Image (cartoon, rainbow, N blue to C red):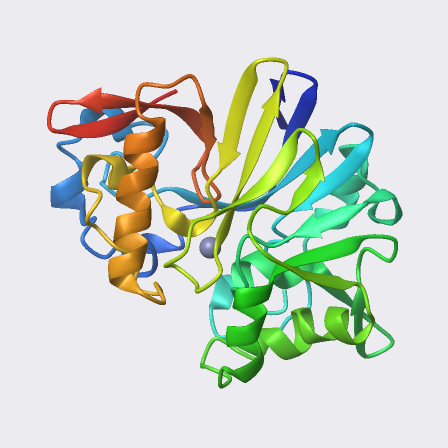
Length: 283
Ligand SMILES: [Zn+2]
């Protein structure tokens, strides 16, 4: 289990899936083998020797000032989904969460960087045929702008993930619909990074002079540091997502801020540094 220490804050990564199954078409369609194999620094962590993208779906468990915060809740078990690897999963996520010191009853906050199916799944679990909140003692922090959008969005081929993973939490009264800038503790807060979804947020951490940021899906794969204009096909507003990504890269390039990618494969984090006309992730 991977763990980072940022000042007094600890961040632990619990992996649900890490492999090449998501693939370039769903992540970054331009990132075909011929395009990524020449970028030497992507191997071995982020691209395999055949040029396939390696990616991860994981949660990040943040302990700050005694508060337990779960960032993004992956895919979940038992959810009917069109993607074969996502469909009716039977994983050991909750056991791993408990082993990491985050039994589900102990969690104070759950935050979804955005309301997409690979970030909301464990918000709920199936009990006696009903979807019930997995974290009964937590406040679930959703971006108000994202819920405003998802509440009215039609169900897509991906499945009714709002109906099984978001709406039950709202109906149970456990959700707080917040604006960017929301603070969990003095050390952990949300920053607005819109585009991939209307109200997309990243999670900023600052403690004891050390800093980190959890990207969410403003960037799906480190290859987008070499080619920031490469976009994800599920961006809500492609132009805004691109502007957000560029501003993010320029803001954190050359700084000591640890950038933790929400879909970056192991080691999942590094510092953004200049690399000729573009950038790379120094791990
Ligand atoms: Zn995602």
